[in-house]
Image (cartoon, rainbow, N blue to C red; front, side, top):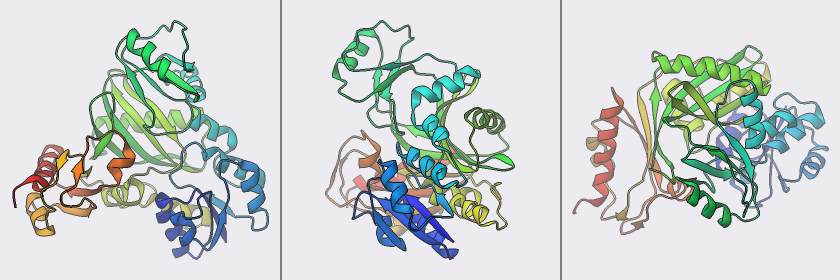
Length: 386
């Protein structure tokens, strides 16, 4: 069997390697000839993945049996177009557009009572009066993630932010108050199954960059609420046979979805944190599902764990050794990947790209507060005197 992976960044490596473990021939496509996933694949095709026709043409000679989705942004639509062109299972172009166009996403869910807020399409320099409650958020209309976000606390700040916008289409919507969560899940012929619910730790406004995640146990009432809410979201969007990742708020009226994409989560979540927490490797299970093999997306267990990225600021005095980290973690260190250098000056966290390049660590414990405290002890080691 042959499979296509469209978008062959480092984030796609796990999916490519898993597919190869099951004897699949992997055709990877990316516009960057140096993409890590191209080197790891069996058939590498350098092609601009924003060009749907070029991608479809590139696959005609070696038509895939199905497409595997790795973390990808706006050009999830190309995957949908390929599925449509070759009659393959998975997301369609229509559903991919709903995942990547934030205005269309809002309108579809709002019409079903699943998203209760104001949301407008805007452009730079616009002087239109918007009926909106502050704080309000401006974000790129297309794609996913925290790129290019502006938060306005009042109308004056909104006018200034609108003047600064250039070229790209944006949406403006109200900020819904509450804690932020992430969802890893899968949609099969049997419906939606939530694999892991993660509570986020974010930097303050305006950046609101995720610097850590804590697993949420299925025994918690909010877990059940999210599972039921996501079933309705999936049905409203018309998602079929795909992996998904969603961000949502725990608001006063229950779960509120910020955005959703029919692909797995990045940032070492779907490939590392989720399998450690639940015993479910969603990429592997989806491969087995598509191959007609026995598969299971229901969590085998849910461990109390935290993944944290190195969100420190200042001059690094030393890089702690593994034993020091183990002691600071109280014996609960499950994974460690530090790419920080001694003497390096760490700037305040402003975006995901710079943060993820520093590495991460994963801890297991009995409760979130203890994990957070242990994480702080670990980060302090970088600034202790030698």
